[in-house]
Image (tube, rainbow, N blue to C red; front, side, top):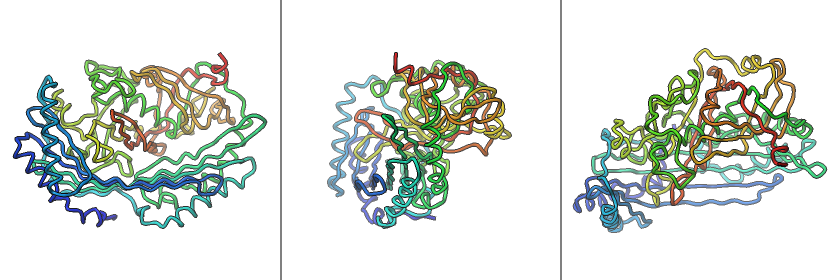
Length: 499
């Protein structure tokens, strides 16, 4: 069981929080909370089995957020003294006084039980920041060299992105939490260069809430994937171009997770649905008047949000408002039944308790409503991927994510992928290329005939989901099984590009 970082615990966390909270209370704040956060981040990049660049950084700061005279106020700094913490409370209250003039309704927060003295550490075995750089580089270079040595591979790009996030939170109600989570994202891309053309193929291993053990055999077999990648790339180079038109699709979790992220995850953020978050990538077609009635997809579609999945990138014990992690329904039997909430929106919309979806990417930023792990559930007795493929006479099996596009309402979209295998009479017949699938959100999920069983379920995800102004990034995972979709519009990206 990993333990909390002693160097973070050695900071005067409680003393700083007490100074800020006492000052906020003295100034008449109705609510006040303090976050002290340290984020260690390291990125190692390799080109053709040589270290190309390395960056290592630590972000450490403190923030104070208040509700005063019915308005939010926020201030942040990097000086960790009691005087500086109290001054941040002064500044936050002053900011609230300005906001109060502009506000049209007083801020009220949904009730949350007090979580006093709570600690939480994410699920990992080996903290990557305790592994010597030489050992990290040796593993990345070894895998890169094997890939580069294969026939048909001309270049190899590789990277590993590591994060350790430590957070102390306390509020006037009596909650105080201390948390630590670690995440890792390794990636390898092979490039083949032909006569005036080039093709690439990337590993499918997703970023996860694990430690260095992820690269040495726990949770993913990188050795096996590196061994099979050159053959897949060689097949892709010679593959024929796809024939455009309505096509049955079996979509692997390594591709479908991104479609979930864009067409469900962002669409069911309540601030977007309410029109509050409009400047950064738009609002949402899934507006609150449709709650409980919108037929998002077929009855086999069940989507949950959670902050609890083991190794999930959004998994946390308590969110940035001190709300305990939970699991909740977003879509049940194909119908929209829930949104992602923070405490303010839960109260304003009379939706009960917050479901713990507040997050800030540093102490320097105010918490926003951010995406939890949003996942399509497998059918308990559902089919295998092979069985789903066997149901298709003429179609495609899509594996791995690549580029994507979606409109400002999270409604019209198209997605590409890493690998596309032709299905003929229920069997795979080799790869095709130049493929994108296009639909509206409800058309696409309304074409889903079947979802696979638990054995087909896998977590995908990303480190860099963007939102807000100033912009913030958040890590998020999406679990899903393989799934079968009927008659989805497939585009030939080469012929489309020629028009």
